Image 1 (cartoon, protein in one colour):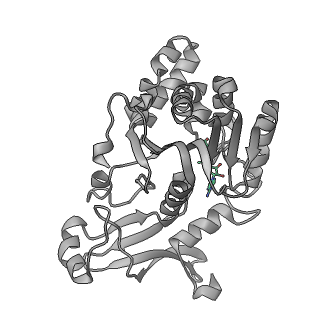
Image 2: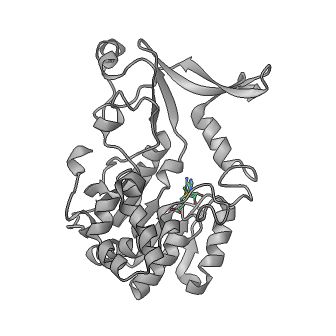
Length: 331
Ligand SMILES: C[S@@+](CC[C@H](N)C(=O)[O-])C[C@H]1O[C@@H](n2cnc3c(N)ncnc32)[C@H](O)[C@@H]1O
C-alpha cells in the first residue's frame, strides 16, 4: 500500500482481504463456513442451514439437465461442499460429472474430503473451460467478488478507497475523484454535463453505491462459454429500481444482470424453493429440520433478502422454480 501512495481502491483492498495467499479470508487456513455457532462459523448459508435447500434446488437442476440435454453440473464457489453433497445425493445418476470451481485451496480440500464417496464424478477445475455444457449453480458466490465503491457528494463522484493512517495506526476511508459512474438503466450517461443535470435527482448527497466489474466480467465469461445448459444464481439481490433507491445509501453487495444469456426467471428464494416443492419436503422432515428449513423462506430471514436468477443458453424452457411469482420484469 505504501508503494501506491498509501491508498488502495476498495476493490483492491477487498481482493487482498479475501484472497491473499495464506492470509485471505478465503485463502487462509481459517475455515469460515459451517452452521453457527456450533462450529465457530462466521455466517450461515442456506445449504449449511438445511439439507432441504439442496433437495429443493435439485428439482430445478434435474429439470434443467433434462431440458438442455446435459448430464454435468458445475458449481462455482462450493464452500464446505454442502450443496454439492445435497445435489449429488438427490440427483443420483442424472449427474455424470460434478465440476467445482473454487478459488480457495483450503475449502477445496474440505470439499474433497466431504465428497470423496462420490469418486471421480467430482472434479475441480483450475480455470474456466473453453466451452461449457452444463447446469451451473452458485450460492452466495457473486457476492464474494470484490466490488468498486463510488461516493456521490451531491456534485461529484469519488472512488472510495482505503488509506493507512500512520497516526492512528489504522485504516480509514479516503475518496478520490473518478470518472467512473454507476450504470443506470443499463447505460452510462452520455456526457458529464448530462450526468450533472440528471444524477443529482437520482442520488442524495452521501450515497455510496457498489459497482460490480468482477461480477459483470464473470457473467460475460459465462455468457461466452455456456454453449448448452442453464445457470442458477442465488444471492443477496435487489432489482435496479430498489438498489438505486435513495434510501439504500449504504449500498449492498449484489449483482443480477443479463449478459447475453436468456433469462429463465428471477424471484425471491422463498418463492423459488416453494415452487420446487419445499413445503412437501418439509412435511416429511423432522421438527428441527422443519424449523431450519423455515428460515430459508421466512421473509425476515432469508426468504426475501435472497433472490434466485435463472439463465439459459439457447431457447430456454419453463423453469419450475419460477412457475409462480416470477419477477423478471423488475430487473
Ligand atoms: C460465501 S461462500 C459460499 C459457499 C457456498 N456456496 C455456500 O452456500 O455455503 C463463497 C464461496 O465462493 C468462493 N469464491 C470466492 N470467489 C470466487 C471466485 N472468483 N471463483 C470461484 N469461487 C469463488 C469461496 O471460496 C467460497 O467457497
